[in-house]
Image (cartoon, rainbow over all chains, first blue to last red; front, side, top):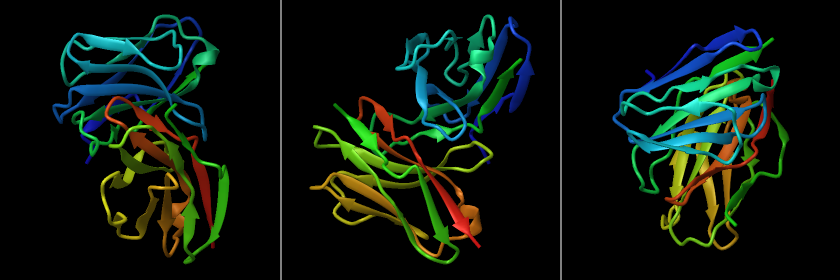
Length: 114
Length: 112
């Protein structure tokens, strides 16, 4: 049973629409991350958060924004979707700074912008 | 620089055979953690196995084992007795405490 949830699982939306991808975790993890991944390709970190009211941009420039008002919730918003945003978006969380801690991933959101 | 290198974009293996997926890493840190994840076509990332840099024994989890060669900075994943359900993308990753790094992945196809 997943402890990190992403909704929606699939989304097809028109160009110019505003969308929010939801990510919630029930594990109390402080660290949360958003990755963008094209099919069969590598993961690119676009945003991360180390706690409430803390958000940072990742390695890949993204037109999206994130917020972290509650520990368990880390939504990603695209103000104006474009076809170039078509991709899979993976949310992850991590228990702590220790090296033994890997990521727990959500099931992903596959976004198609038409 | 700190990075993960997976040099095999695609691999094929016969069902019930063993397969090794290569991973080398580059870090100047003495303490780090190494991970392998599996990503089926459905898209989710599934944790497979972990190896700490100070662990003397190679990690094993069921049919998965990690061949850790610290001096060579390699952390290869060995899957024994391949099954059709093992067909997926496999990502090697490294946690240095400050950042998490992913490789570019290897696509494994198990042939009946």
